Image 1 (cartoon, rainbow, N blue to C red):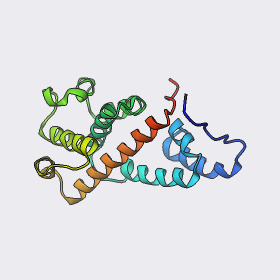
Image 2: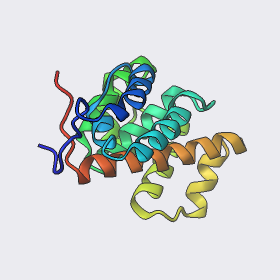
Image 3: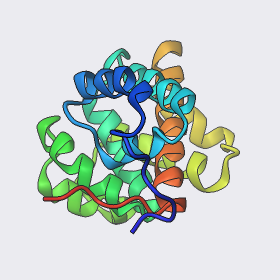
Image 4: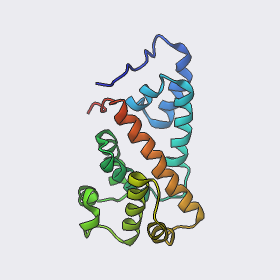
Length: 174
């Protein structure tokens, strides 16, 4: 059960336009967004940022979902991992690869680009400061825009998992 209450959407008609916008962009009102609606300015800013990260970048969906899944593993964000498994599969990540994300360093399921992305994700997520050798290894696979989008995706999904876990947001019903 979430640590704080979700807002009563029926009792607050001012939330209806933002709720409608969220639903049009996300397909439904996920518990994450329900919680965010406790602060409409934060919910709106979050929606804009994550829409840009998920839908307006040139970063491949495959790389994006590998990053999100890896962050979920590191941060023990089960909600995020479960929510993104269908997206990962849709982006061509096999179930075997999904199963190996936790142990990517010893796995044979990933290529050089995946491994460089995982190392960068791990470094940003665990240590914040990225060693030069880790940066150089991933940077050779992306141009300046790609590195900006990759870095922003890692940063954004660390935000997501930390918010989900700190407030113990309820998993989506199956």
